[in-house]
Amino acid sequence: MTATSSGSSGSSKSAGSSGSWWASGAAERAGEPGQRAWALMQRFVESHGRRGELAEALGFRLGGGRGKILLQLRDGPVTLSQLAAANGLDAPYTTLIVDKLEAHDLVERRPHPDDRRRKLVTLTAAGHRAIETIETILLRPPPAVGVLSDDELDQLVRIFTRLLDADG
Image (cartoon, rainbow, N blue to C red; front, side, top):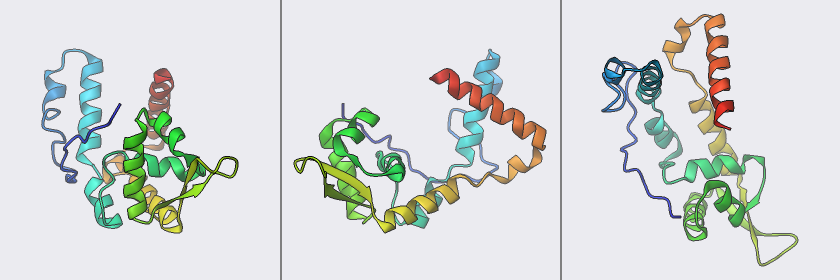
């Protein structure tokens, strides 16, 4: 399967903007509590998007799977076929993503120590720095999170952990 670009502009929105074009007012129109919660979560997250800030800090956009694959290399080198399988992508598209990361000097291909026909994809020093930048930007909570008490934040963490666990 080949991935395709979503075509989003990647522009960041201010904290007061409505988020996605459909989420604005969706919570009010939703009939079920689950729909309302989902619409509000999406609206909040999308209104604090960081794609533009990331692109400015890195000098390029992380779309097309590049960011996901870059972050997967944090734990060490992996083969192209492992990257493809982990992301549900075909080998040619995975190669294209790695080519783009390599063009930005974030990764390099090295021969596999046990099988020279295979290549390991590994982070460069610039790739490690890019990950530090990405994590600094993405882990910085928006100011609105500051209105929640520590107890409310703990409750939010428990809720999201439960949701993620339910997803498998």
